[in-house]
Image (cartoon, rainbow, N blue to C red; front, top):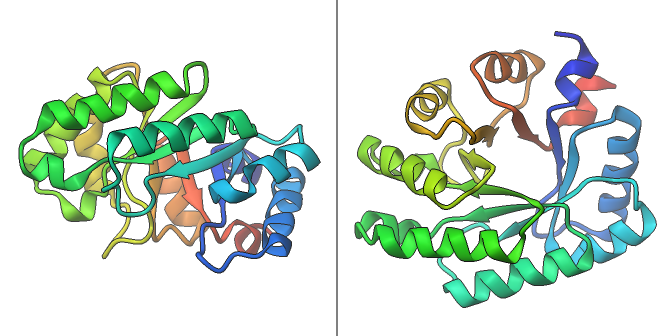
Length: 213
């Protein structure tokens, strides 16, 4: 793959809790230069970024990074992000609900957030490092039923991030209209290429500028 083919699938990301406005500005300028798929930024910066760089595809996170907010809070967060100018939403599921086998509650959150960002891209983060194989399979079914555009492996804040075995599992059990985003621990060009070849459509990466300078 060429560099540009890879970059076109990258969500150029800065989600550090201490991210300053100058860090976000640098991220946006790099995204424009590299022509990445999006910038993925904290919700508090969405409105400022969209105002300054209306041409950028802006992604933000909901229920991040733990996912244990209530459904009404996630719905409000999503509606506010869309109102501020977000083009894409990456939402963390309630992992506890999934482990409790409260699948209807998980599905309800996904569908409610889907409603709040209708017409925008929705990616659902399942935090694979916290799940058993059965839970990952059930998550694939719930993400599909909830109408999400993508299933995403990880927040990058868990004990581990994306791995190729989970991508293979997702490809087997996810709906045919759902794409896959890998994130967490992807730091080399070789890893990016491997995940894309394995069937991912997006890659979350905070090291893009280091890899492609």
